[in-house]
Image: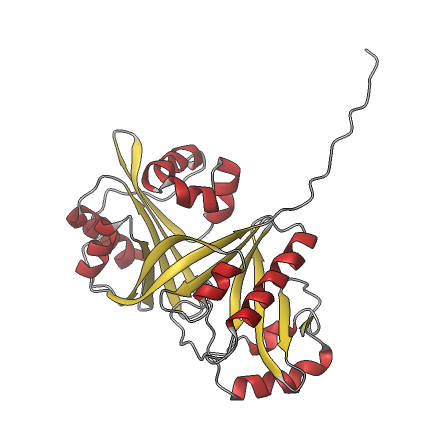
Length: 299
């Protein structure tokens, strides 16, 4: 039986944790954690233990005990990200598919347009996710480490107001159409994805050719880079100066898409090492759109 979380589920969730089932989902905040990290166990009870109604959680109850769960966090306007997908290695794939399908139905009732899910490329639930309507759209490599210190002599600058349109043009040049269709096709959608953190812009002939963001998450930094037609040594120099200036002593994590091999080469030159391969999936939702009523106005 698939059902929402209840106030009485605390003991059952603790029992599920003791069975040691891994978290198959790698949300943005879970990157770099172990698959058996249950740091967010009690957050699945939100909003039952909090006034902040944000997380949406479904449990798979086989009648005798909890067999699995899926939990999401919202981001942007109308998007959910799966950051908890607990499923037993010997569980039935069809049951996992049913759980994710129910998540999609719930999301549609809440007006959610897309659900995002990141899995390891060898995840045992990848087939179940695809059967539930999740479509792969990008493969990424996670790099992790403490970058070597380089002289802070990059000609780059911080992001300023008025940069959005130029950065959106860089995004459209670098990111393949299939990825943009899954994440952001318009400037308004794009703005929901890329906010906050320390930012570096490198320009040539008045146009951005490299854009890097560095955001603090728990005890680490997460680095995101879009780079145009720059060589790996040039990217290494710019990113090295950027991380020397803002990275401190924390470990740095960087997700690099397969269509950015020059960025991957630069991170390796900076001393970061590959730590995992992931596949990003999206489920597009059909939601009701409020119709507009025209009212006649006399001139």
